[in-house]
Amino acid sequence: RQLGRVRGGAPCTPAPTVRTTMAAAGCPLIGLRGQYTSTVSVRFDACKLDSGVQLDGTLEVASVRALAPEATCDLAGIRVKIDTQATLGLRLSSPDGGRADIQGTGRTSTLRTRAVIDSRTADLDQRRRRQRPGGGVLLDQHLSGRSRATVDGAALVLDGAFTADLSLLGLSADSQAKGVRFTADCCHPIGGTWTVHASAPAGELSRSVVYGPECGQISVDGVAGRLPTCL
Image (cartoon, rainbow, N blue to C red):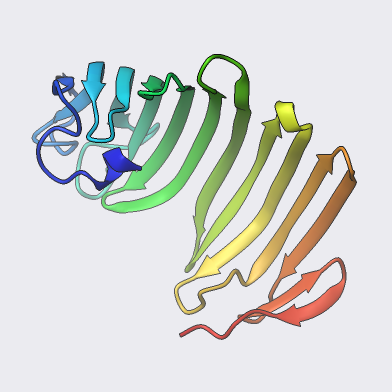
């Protein structure tokens, strides 16, 4: 969170090492005259935050941009496919001896016609592990899932499935979205379903949410209701 609040200057001392590389897209309409940033690598070596927390590890983002299948390199037919992968491996060490490790990967695949996104698929696999001073694990969390957003006329449609596992607490949860539709004139989904199943030592819980068809309409396990009015 502290890294995200930094504006200008290095987030910690000594400053992380940042390296970028460029690549050619094969079409001058992609990127800046056919050139784009293909990798960004950030390395932290004993980098101290104001709070005294020390950062070690790397963050790397790599992307490939190219014409989509059957697309042409002209203003009438250009369609771009962008594949991106982010890899994170960080260790945060506190002055009192506590430690947190964050490892994971995230992948997105985007199809774009000129400046308009047609679809985007995203995959996430992340693990967080936190250790108390002197040893002993406080948190062991694993998050994974895949989502796909597509444009259907004036609507954005979301499908996906996610899993969260907190093994130390014996907690796990699975959620699935099917055809959840969003439009510009409503702040809530106007269609689709969202299901959640959670498991804990005390028992299990399942919920099924159906949206729409009107803005604000919702049904939870078959019981109709309404969401707050959009401002």
